[in-house]
Length: 322
Ligand code: NDP
Picture 1 (cartoon, helix red, strand yellow):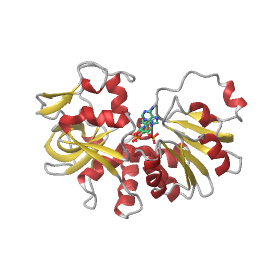
Picture 2: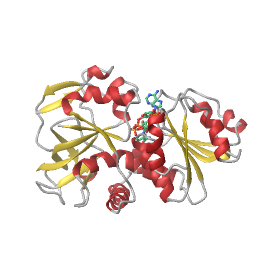
Picture 3: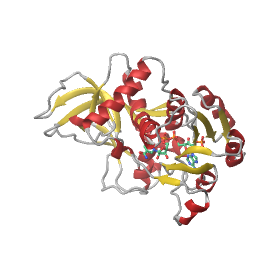
């Protein structure tokens, strides 16, 4: 079976196309023929070595496709079912294995590639907007990388909840996308000072919550964009990890709160996963949430997909097609 494998961490060139043997599904697992695999920024951290993995490693966690085999003890699924997951054991492949309790049936109204494009980033946007900081009407939120995969979905969910959003984007070409997602203001933070833009947007007050997935490059500016006792949500490191800092800084900047959440802690049970996914699927089916597939690469070009994502050349979701 054709798959991408990593034997050593490093640049995109470490994503090697190979023929591998995929075993039959173990107890509690499904085997899936992958129709679309989601490319997520976390895949680049695992490939580069920023996040540790044991090698050799089959990259990719997000997949949507068709069940081809069902392991012992699995109930509720059968061959031919369309399913999606954020926990595939190597999604960059023609076929993959997935724990059945992490697989979601795809509703009839949702196309298979849309499911692959929605789940990881949508579930992330869901927990950020509803639990990490339960946004409500009148709240103000800063969303960095507002034309990215998470950014477009998070902006839309924030607007559905009645918040006001200021989004940042890396180029003029991305402004319209952030606007279409509902951002009330958009700042091109590669040439404008986003903290000043936030101050203008909030009449000098600062935002209630800042969702920062950029990390190193935006850390200082994000701290300065919050109102007293506002919440700094650091949820990614697209520009590199946030450097070590003294907690006293939070006092000096206005008794700020800070959290560093990760998706798995907001999907602690199969019920929690299904409830968040049900919301997302319902919003998409109702036309309230738009999923933008910005680019689809052939599976064999996974390295090019990573290069595009890491060079800020993508918008919305990046998919691989076996
Ligand atoms: P995106 O589609 O948002 O791509 C990343 C974006 O970050 C780029 O398009 C770019 O947008 C921006 N960016 C800013 N500086 C850099 C830089 N130096 N290098 C590369 N990109 C930069 O990716 P995802 O939607 O997949 O993920 C977004 C973020 O959310 C990532 O940091 C990811 O790790 C995080 N995440 C965290 C999760 C969690 O559980 N904590 C779960 C899922 C995602 P622009 O050009 O507009 O600045």
